[in-house]
Length: 272
Image (tube, rainbow, N blue to C red; front, side):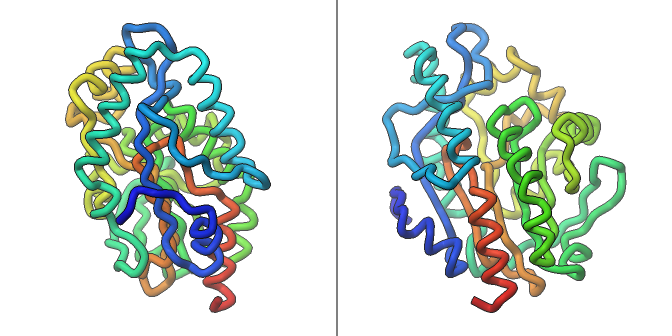
């Protein structure tokens, strides 16, 4: 898989059900305070091709967030997190993750109200959108969750359901769901067990993990000290359990645009 972004491919991915895969070399964000490095922002060792934001509200918000960080981040912090994301790229996580045409592994997880939810059960009702987020501490994740809440009725109008997966402990996922006013299910994938089956797990570098411990004690948030997180992956799965559309990116600041997901679901519904 080549490390490039094509606007044409991005559009075709949503309209033709092909997989939308972007591999950018970026890094975790944080404020300009040297120690600890906060996870609020991120930067990159170099500037990747930009995703056009015209008519793409989530991308517009994310780009504004990135720009704000670029103005205030210290060079040493940029280098620290650039090395972290490069480790993800070097590990080939995006290339090896589940993608279009693959069978989506079944799972059963607990939602924010303590109920067991299985992918198999969800698929009995219609297609499913799986949306991974790193945690409520990540502002890019919160922007994304809010954007999908805003398009939830459009997603449901296609007969599909939306579920978000996070490695956070259940009580943390409840806090996120309440804070963001989410009407879709948030599932706790403690230990990244499901994420591992989908191949979207990566391990933070020691430096990044240490900074996350200082910033918000990630081991308490996730209930383990593995230093692992999922990519911000998004999948559209049809009722046969086949992945029909996917967004995978080594730079967690780039997210699947809700409009692209809705277009993919509409194409699935109409047989396009």
